[in-house]
Image (cartoon, rainbow, N blue to C red; front, top):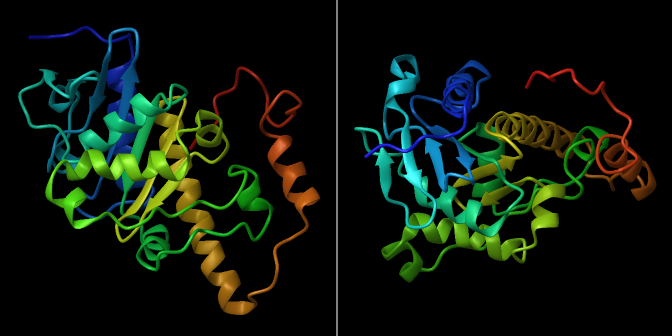
Length: 241
């Protein structure tokens, strides 16, 4: 069975996946990106275990949003597919999801710590700390583990779509970062930024664990790029990740 998806989605998902190792976010096959076509009721995701250097558009797998069934593709989808599906179902604003095991973001996840807002670089993208989830229970790990991984993110954000827009990333405790955005490409961009601010935060904390800048400065940096009064960038020009 095959399902048509909107024009360009498969190429966008392929390009985003191929960029993961290029920007240093993954070792071996440790990462995946998906993109959703809500009108068709499906999302496209990287197959499980396929090396990035071998990945082609024909390898991508299309999964039904409602029940997680594969509707197009000859390979198994990523083992994280159910986590992606859970996030798509919970947050209508999400058009793409990225998961990586990038070093510095994983360090915070393994330390069970939020990535704190320590400066304007963080505040340019995330309107608050990148939060870490609770640890999954033995029961949640034993059954429907990947879907429950999504559930702890949804619970962390109180299933609030606006919170998901303002802080488009979360750390799964002991695991690593999931990021999202309006498109697959945007979710990858947020993964790049999440890793960068985690790296910066670790360096900052090693030098001086001082209080962050005042809220008015952080808010100015967030609102000049996001919301109705944003004035950063030039409409019509695509920003590179």
